[in-house]
Length: 202
Image 1 (cartoon, rainbow, N blue to C red):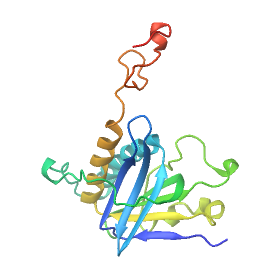
Image 2: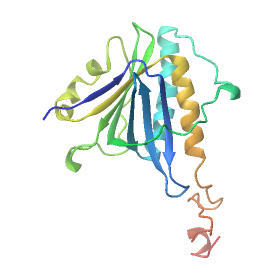
Image 3: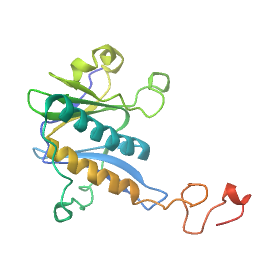
């Protein structure tokens, strides 16, 4: 079966965002460019881990190749706008791959469609970030065959755009329900059954 590669190299905009109220939010990665808008759904933990691994990738690129790292985006230039409407889910993400292209000093992010349950990777579904001097596909050549029939979203970002994505992704993740100070589980507006209080409402 033919798969689709939705490539934005680079996108006009690439952000993490949500639809829905805290406690019932659906998380998306959304890329816009060339008159197209592509949205793919993923889990909150994947967004959080993606931001963490991208930060590690930038630091490693700086350490190994001397890539200059941008400062955190100024508050004035934060992208706080909602996702572009309509948010039509292209697919649900199973695996996220990262690489750094030394030739162009850009970060490549690839979101790969979730396959059959037995074929999905366990854990977070995020490949280890790597530094590659050509392309993401070279970095993952051992994994190409199982994923060859899966749709994917590929974006190429400058370090500045990557840092802006990280900043927004972290704010999106943190904007959900606050954690219980005792057990760490999310608090609903009406409270929750806290295991540290033997099931009493907090």
